[in-house]
Amino acid sequence: AFNGIEEVNMIKDDGNVIHFLNPKVQASLAANTFAVQGHAEVKALSDLLPGIYNQLDLSNLPTKIPVVPPTDITALDDADDEVPDLVENFDVPSKNETV
Image (cartoon, rainbow, N blue to C red; front, top):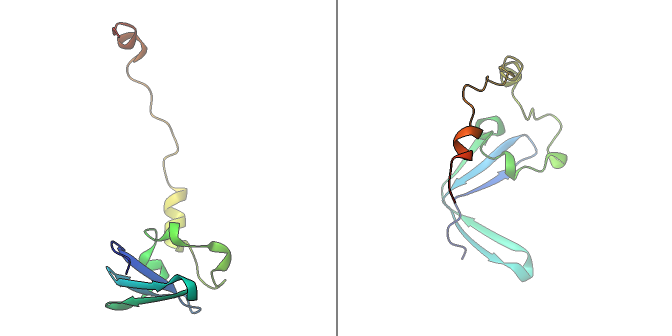
């Protein structure tokens, strides 16, 4: 048994995800077999994003699944890309420090 696994997500061909939270996981590595036990919920992939983004292999996702919902794209376009002005000179205090 593997301890400390927080979640298991199995992505189905239809774009839904079988989501296990804090499951019990056992494996037979020689047989390349895993057993996942616990309460499972079927969720839409978009409901779990961006939290599971690092778990995704985007090359294997079904093409009909939008990885970024359209509402999020407009939010990214409206983001403020300006860098704020520097209000203090941080080099001066660092020059006065002793090692």
